[in-house]
Image 1: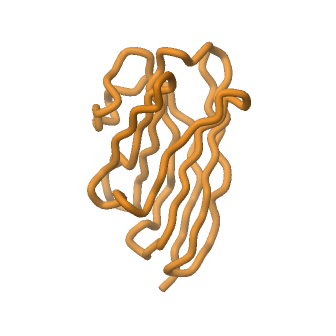
Image 2: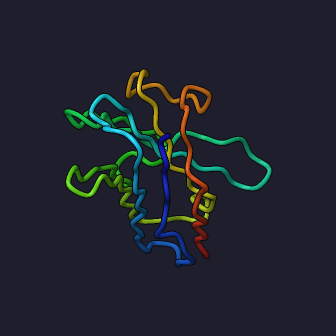
Image 3: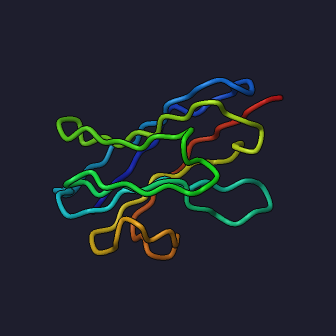
Length: 125
């Protein structure tokens, strides 16, 4: 069973940076795609970024492209999301997700089988 545990959320000011981490366990993730999603109050869960574990191909939503960077560390089985120049519109619960059989450009939450519990990111103006 895949387990995903996020950390790194918090309260920051507009313009600040934050790095989220997601430790993955329970599988060998060579063929997996790992993604970050977020959900603000009253809104649907939305795609942020994804990476193919092997090869490192990435995709981003237009709203974060150029500000956020997704990466992974093989040795630590950890997924990261580096977030720069944060704005209040980035305030949400951020979730890590994984799936073995999707394309890294698939932005649909329903495509992912495994999810973490989420970490809150709050950006004040």
